[in-house]
Image (tube, rainbow, N blue to C red; front, side, top):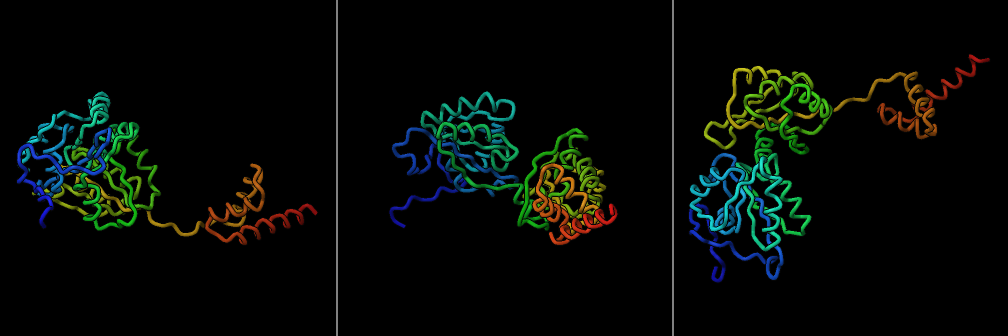
Length: 314
């Protein structure tokens, strides 16, 4: 259409190409922080805007500058801005420097090795500091190992939670797993290949050997593999050795039926609450809700116990 700027596509970006002006920058005092998603495997998954931003940013902060160089070469892009490293080891020290660049009007692009910055990757500190200085923060949406693994897992995806990497030490890992043992939502984890067998064995111990899971390996890459099955079975498979980038998806805890509590126990729980200062009406309601039984059932048990006690005293 006449008058409309041509879309710049990966591999066709001219050296020195500048991204189109953003309306929110007109007359603005500060710059913009752009979080850019990068391919998790296949470079052709890169969003078109990634090439634009790489070409036109004033500063490109990269988790690994060598990987960034390979990415720009694959996309046919020559960044015109300054390239700096931004990884776990220098994140705290480099954040103030980048914030000052933003405050001075620079457009800073943040990229990590794969996927979205801040998701188990550097980025959170810079975003928080930029927001504190009222700097605009936006994103170039891109591939996500979390969402890709969820979609491929075959497990429920309507509700899920991302748990990142588990602790390396066995005791801490078991403790973290116990914290979510009753979590009903589907769980997503990242894991290193050399720790996968221990992690799956710990999950089988805490969640149950038959809990369903999926191990997603090398997503979108040449040797992509999704292995589905019970946790115990997956742990035995992983013990033989696994390579590549790993995302683990675990089924949430099954829904429990009503708790089987006899009348004497219901009465005891009400008394404990009353002795703690709670009114009987509220105590009965709380006990009924916790046990999954009607309030009338708890009320009748309390009345009977009171009557039996009075009869015995007579």
